[in-house]
Length: 320
Image 1 (tube, rainbow, N blue to C red):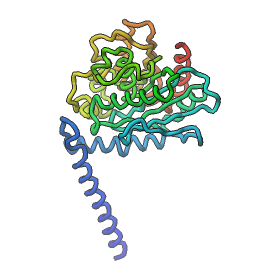
Image 2: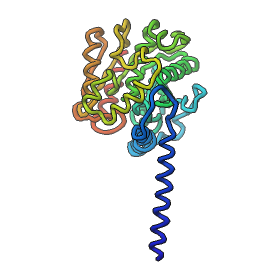
Image 3: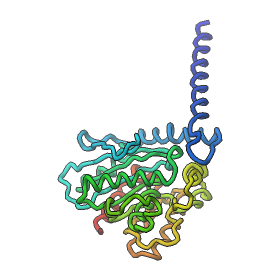
Image 4: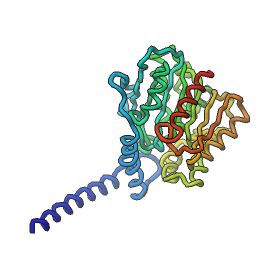
């Protein structure tokens, strides 16, 4: 009898949790853009943003040492925050490193997941910033990029002496590459945000595009997990599709900052890196492209090739 009662209570708790989740998933992301999402799509968004990505961050991350990180707000939105990571040594570099996290535009965060490479840059004498930004689908293109412009303007205001190495991984690689193009070309910047004066932004010294989304279709064709959902959440869920979302959207790019394009050999996004690298190496001699053959998507933070990549990035920074 006791066991039967315990089972009934357990099943009741599970049922309440399940119903609560169903209600929550059913009501989120309604009216947040021109696209309506099915329940299955909402469940997918919820899983990536509230379960899988936070779990990966916990498993793969290492806490920053005490006193090395200071969080600041650069805007009014709750997600408009950045970390300033200071060096254990004196800051010797004239250029700062600015990092934009990945997460398919709908998940992810700055923080401990990226501590290993960012501390390595900091210990090499760089002032390092790591930026959060409002996420899709509640924020639609181009508002992610516009929030990041605000973050860069904050850095320019508070640290005017620094030019920047702009880096990002996965969706963050897409955003970093796009910002590098927009900011290096004032006429293109007007298309993104006519109210932003390029002189209020730091100069882009280099861009590092870490296994980013550089075209719209190859990653879907090559079977990147949930690529169709991510594409719908970010590419389709916008009222301004005429504003380029990926580097390959641009007809011409008059000025391209020195760029390091990184591909992972075991990544379904590799062809997107190759497509972009082939396109821009025709235009500029200051483009470096490397495939890390044994690496998988996300290896900037941990896994095969992580140490080699961060060392290669430091060498790339030193060239400029």
